[in-house]
Image (cartoon, rainbow, N blue to C red; front, side, top):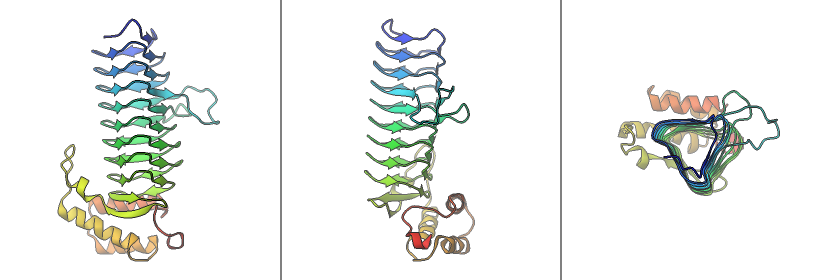
Amino acid sequence: MISDKAYVDPSAVIGKNVTIYPFAYVDANVEIGDNTVIMPYASVINGTRIGKNCKIYQGAIVGADPQDFRWNGEQSYCYIGDNVVIREHVIINRGITSQGGTRIGNDTFIMADSHIGHDCHLAGESVIGNGVTFAGGVEVGKCVILSSNVVLYEASKIGDWVFVKGGCRIAGNVPPYIIVAHNPVTYFGVNAAVMRKNKNGYKFTDEQIDDIAKAYRHLYQSGTSVFNALQRIEEDLEPSEVRDNIMNFIRNAKMKVVAVPIELE
């Protein structure tokens, strides 16, 4: 159902069984997948690609112009995966170039009043709490929980299965499988309670969780440098998916991870 009181540009590509409520706005150069719902007063802007089975609530703006002085009106894009929920008054900006773009992965739930800046990449299957704000170029792994009013500064990186407690300000790299809290950010343990649940086919074993806890004891509780902690992790733990994910994240972050004292980096 597409209301005659909505504005839908004639060039927009609309899938099967799409519902667009009165007073919604769908711009030119937009694609909307099957079974998606656009609620009243939501806006989908030029360059946006929305997958199947999504729901965009009242007042949300998807694919808004990027808030970056480097953008000079070039064509750019915002990609929304399948089964994504975007609640009231969320703003998601497009990328600043024709390459890459802003990307929200499948099965992401974005709560009200959040803002996701240009060129952010969310792997999917995550929950973004009320009022969370992303600066440009942030990367978020899969199965992440960001509690209400978390602030992610430019180019921050969040690993898989991270839980960030409410109100944290993240200006750096949060390695996978952990909980962080407070300001300044503090290591708060392994995200074991969530990881033990059978979520979307994922369920971590007790052995995997034990290995993760051992790895982070070396990093956060041994009083040594990140470089030495990596060596200890490699020596202490057998090769595995979780060990390699931790080590690769830290190496790719050039040893710069949150909650480690500067003198120990």
